[in-house]
Image (spheres, rainbow, N blue to C red):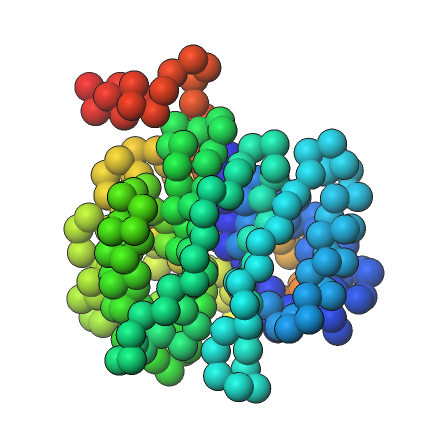
Amino acid sequence: MKIAAFNVQRLGWEKVKKKVVRDIIIKIMSQYSVVLLVEVMDVRGVAMELLLEDLNDYGDNRSNRYGMLCSEPLGPEGHKEKFVYFYRENEVEIIDSYQYRGNAEDVITRQPFVVLLKCRNTVVEDLVLIPVQTKPSNAEAELNALHDVVEDVRERWKNDNIVILGDFNADRPHLCMEEKETLLISLAPYRWLIGDEVKTMTRNNNHTYDRIVVYGESMLEAIVPDSAKAYNFREHLNLTEEEALTVSDHYPVEVELKQKPEGKTEVELVEQMWS
């Protein structure tokens, strides 16, 4: 089961209403069982409703449909954005969700809208996703604050199967190597699956802003080895740079979870992984 995060760069009605652009976005999204869209600027929700409708009318999606879950608009006035999850309803159920609020001293510009998923076909059955869209000028502080989000999630749901994903702005000029190495989420038991050598931008592609981070060895063991990568849709869909940029200046980042052998419970699978 593939999961992805995709910064679709100011995704709203002006972009979604263009059928050529919408069709490319749908082709990209249809590869995944769960895809998180960040930088969604659709306060009324009309653009996301159209995207969901056309997504479910594309190819095999007609018989393996997507559901959608949106956060409230987040961030400062004039710069509100949403986190939006699309998920295949035959494969994934949303058990719970909540809007992290932090505290008065919290530095996160757009607080994560966290979801708890039941994955029917993977070795990890109950999976937490924490979405990220940092403010570039405040990337270090916001990434450090994600550790508090993780601890809040662990206390709330008693679950360590946690994936943090999205646009971290975790590269120069927003974050240098020395700053990255000292982040709380760069220390054990966190593991970064998208390395610094992976380029995640469609233009001037020498940056790794988008990342996927997992919490703990059990979660790491549930990942298909070497499956974490950026999806270069410009190359795979034979687009020009100009065509790719009508979609986004970012590539999606993705990872695959190991499938569950039939007839085994999550407890049995964990014991098997560590035996």
